[in-house]
Image 1 (tube, rainbow, N blue to C red):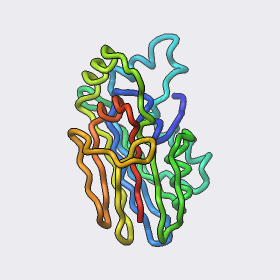
Image 2 (image 1 turned 90 degrees about the vertical axis):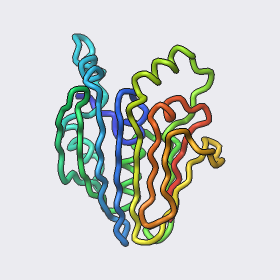
Image 3 (image 1 turned 30 degrees about the vertical axis):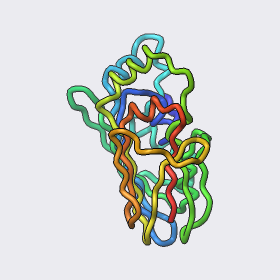
Length: 212
């Protein structure tokens, strides 16, 4: 299966999954990330049709993660599992990182507008969940709602001290409350949960900005 990875790519490659990332920082900036996402079986089946194999872009195998770890020297795969329910393939992986910059290289493998400044003591990590879509087709928006309404994008970060989280648009302006979303901040653990449809249909863009 072709690998494009990782987190921002998973969030944006397709509308048929939910993703949950739980990140824990140690005082020296090292830590772990536990990642779980659900891939619709219909999406996986589409990628396996004759002539489509080379377009498989959602990593569902341990080898996909191992190839990514080989390219990121500060990341190491700790565990991997895969299971299925009636509708989804559910992938779980846990990795450790040697530094926050190593983690950021993993999270921003797509080279999007995400950014990181600071160090283990204090810093800002901004992750681009959506760059925003202009002039959306109403029929496409309806289709996206239908296939993504049961899924969420969730992320949490646990810090040695107090951290905070805000959601902003692509211009860096604070966003009003997103329907159906939850934000927990400030605290030693901060988190957000946003309906996937809200991410996919955003016109102003969505950035998650973590500070500590």
